[in-house]
Amino acid sequence: MNMEPRQKKKRLAYYITDHGLGHAVRSLEVIYSLLMQTHELEVIVVSTLPEFIVRSNLQFSLAMRRKRLDIGLVQKDSIRFDLPATLEALRSLYDHKEVLLAEEIEFLQTENIQAIVCDIPFLPFAAASRCGIPAIGIGNFTWDWIYEGYASSNARWMPLVSWIRECYQGCNLFLQLPMHGDCSACPTIRSVPLVARPAERKPEETRQILGLPSEKKTYLVSFSALELNQEAQERVQDISNAVFLHKSPLNFRFNNRICLDNFDISYSDAVAAADGVITKPGYGIVADCLVHGVPVIYTDRGSFPEYSILVKEMEKHLGSVYLSSENLYAGRWESAVRQLESQPLRNPAIVNNGAQICAEEILNLLLPMGAPPHIPSQ
Image (tube, rainbow, N blue to C red):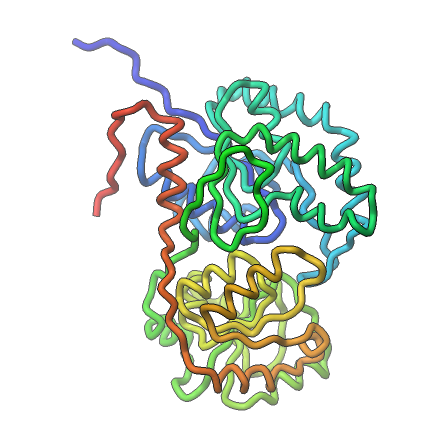
């Protein structure tokens, strides 16, 4: 009888920034692909993301450690952010870096973590380097590139940028997504395809579930926060032959809207079923629109370097119309809606198996050569 002890699962810590849901959604796609490819892995998510985001994107629960190790940008709302507050928060993080680093080293060692993945907090790379374990980054930018763009008007950013770059030096492999900025702070970069959520239902099925009339155009309003006063909501309500979809925490009161919270459909299903999406350009929603060929009405995002890259890709592959933030908040959407309706539909051919490719790259570092992958039953 073979009395050899059963091999323990490999343990992976997956750090996810809470700056924007796009990072979370694509990370959860990669985690899902990881766990579908092998039984030999346990994933611990390290983030302050709301747990409902995890539950709504996966069919199973994950171990979570609530810890924030990056700042991103301090937001005033979905569109506007506070640069002075961001700088001060980042400075505070820097002032406490040795304590935070010691805590992460203790976590990695105590929990027997054998590798980390970051999308895209920087401090964990320094901790992994000191522990001598592999560290992988996934993203379409690194924070030093974002913050460096603000240094020309305020030199206080530069010491922080230098520190962040030092942390990213501990990244053994950076999996660079399409629509990317400068990620050269990471020594080794490998390009991977788009990571995006595939729709689970055909658009016709989703529209039937939502009770959408065939003669009306449907627009998904995709923001985490958007306050419209009564006058603005009345203007939206006056747009004829249009239905607007939204999810909480958006709280609209106009009659020609449907709240998706009342239906058991995924967000990617809603994107695929829409005639257009009204949003600010962020990686997650732009990726969803590219994969499903859904045109976009997009608004301002302030001084954020990623913005122009995403807009360029939208205009290259999709029907797209710009709507100023002033008109967005005023509910003056009709002109943009009619302009989008007049554009021909485009069906871009976008390779979107990035989650599978990223998972394979991670497993190559974690699992021994020749270990059989787990093939899920059909």
